Picture 1: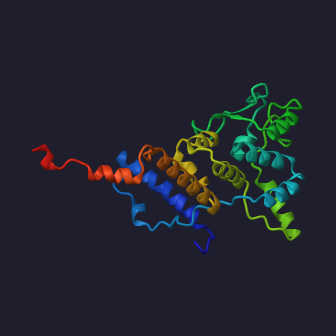
Picture 2 (picture 1 turned 90 degrees about the horizontal axis):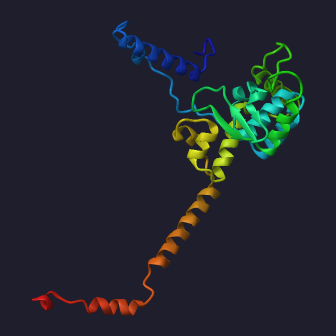
Picture 3 (picture 1 turned 180 degrees about the vertical axis):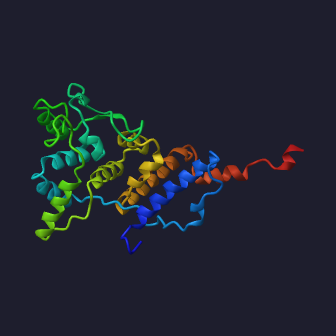
Length: 260
């Protein structure tokens, strides 16, 4: 691993994929054992890497990204519409419905990922501007006529490099723009079922990674719960009798002798 500079996460993914292949081979009677079970797979304890942009980081990044219009607009759509970069780059003009204010995600990684999103005001401005021209794509390729652009990673890397030359460190990747939106909207109180539908996830479990409650959020939640308890106590408390009367009633309860 150290010799070939292969990261643990790459080895882990490859071994898991290979293990699934051997599982299939065993079911087809092509193999009788899964040798991957005898291999020590690198731990995934540190596999979750997520950077949530601060408002300052967001402003600095998009100020620099204006030199790369495709990167800038894809990034803003990710922030506004919580879409994946590969969903944005393949958007067709036919996927945009300005009358309804909707963006149709038709090409994605799974059935659950195909969805309809309500566009924000900023997204509408970006998309209206990009409807110009005869290309059927929102992000047409300049190199390949009639096709859409590919990945935006090279433009992002250029922004990171130029920022470093100015003494500014950018430590996130484009996908973190989607993470940033998801975390912010989750902290604003959107329920996980709705968030899963917006993000195009089939399971609530998959969106739980976006929920990062701060100390202030947890404190506010407990204060709200405490108020609910107090309100419930006020509602259930006897109104016609005081504590002394309640005690008197307990003393006046009939004994077993009274029923003989």
